[in-house]
Length: 139
Image (cartoon, rainbow, N blue to C red; front, side, top):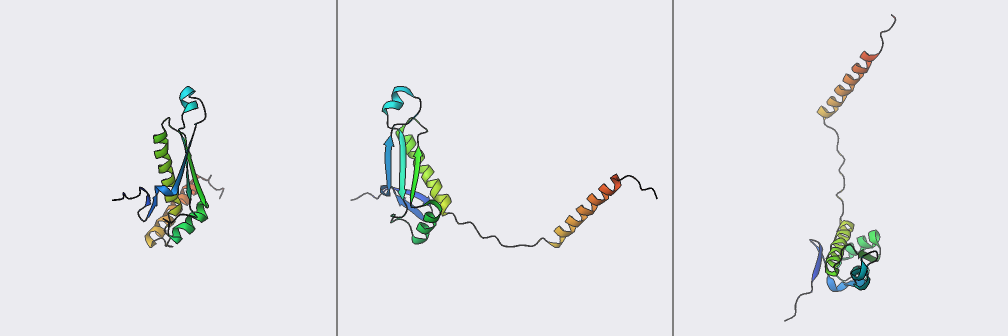
């Protein structure tokens, strides 16, 4: 019996098999002494949008337009390779989910009659207040 491929669930209707992602490990830069110099804890995660079989045509077109043909995430925040890998997967999920999000179209609305009246009343009060600040006229 074969095991199902592990999936990265991006949105409720978009899941990417982990075998479509390419993962590369390298030494993390910066200070850290012996551990940082010898451990491949930096994670580079790549996702080929153009060649993915997991995406629908609409999803692929949206990702290509917003992110390009290749999405790359690099993480070297932690000292652990496993933690950096999980952070990279989470960041990739976030980037893809934001790119796939289609904002709701705005429906034009009008202010209610009461709202228009409140606005005019407030303008009238401000006008009167400013008029009362003026010095008295010489008449």
